[in-house]
Amino acid sequence: MFEDLNPLLHSQLRLAIISYLISNGAADFNELKEVTKATSGNISVQLKKLEKEKYITITKGFLNNYQHTSVEITKNGIDAFEEYVKALKKYLQ
Image 1 (tube, rainbow, N blue to C red):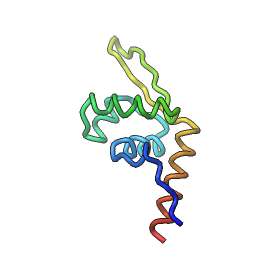
Image 2: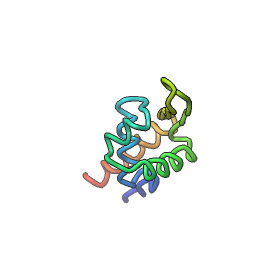
Image 3: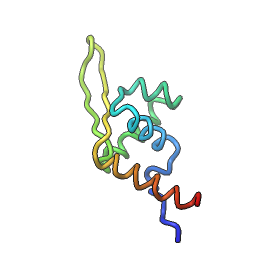
């Protein structure tokens, strides 16, 4: 039978963020905003949800005297994405 899809990754924006990080390993906040075309507020909310589940790590600091937020995918995030794709493939068979 079909496996349940991970509800955290089934959200379009969270899936876009994780997919981008799978390909790139890490990104800064503005890069994710540009790629996803989402608002700052929406991205912030979704990043917090992903961080809470330990799918990503968020590092805040300064770069050239400006606030800088860096996002990196974790091993848990990679594993969750791989499981999501595996479950999705079963739907397509």
